[in-house]
Amino acid sequence: MLRKLCMLFMATSILALPVSVFSAPIFKTGDMELSLAGSGSSDKDFDATTTSVEGTLGHFFSPTLEAIFRQGIGFSDTPNGSDWNGSTRVGIDYNLPFSRYIPYFGASIGYLYGDSVKEQFIAGPEAGLKSFVNETTFILAAVEYQFLFEDTDDADDAFDDGRFVYTLGIGFKW
Image 1 (tube, rainbow, N blue to C red):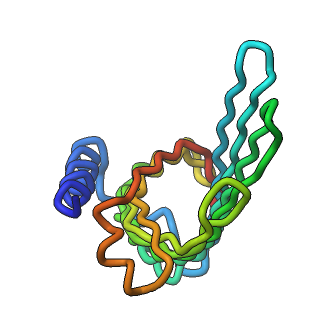
Image 2 (spheres, rainbow, N blue to C red):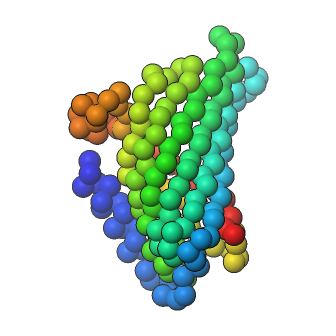
């Protein structure tokens, strides 16, 4: 599984090279970044609705190294009742300083909680691509591999039973 994640990251980085030209980094030490993503679905009668939103706040320690805080919240309303779930994570991302296309990779760790999930720790690697549409706004596409565990003894065994999480959103830097 780890080999597949490494291959995905390498493919993302290699595909970004031909369309990018090395230039001055878009990010500077001290820059901040906010990204937002959301999703939702309903049945045809709007009797069962599910929505989710995720936000990430990042701080750049250098033009390439970013600390992140990520909060996700999901809500479901069905004829059987309603429930909510959330996850709170922190992590580090390494951004590759190309022109307007910035691939990145990193890892995060946090906690998963809510009404319809088993509350436990969550961790894993991540990779993505930020495509700037102007000086401060970008489109974000990312994939995370998350594995769940209750304590550090479970972490090694849980890695093989993880899940992929995909994100498409918008981001802003200042």
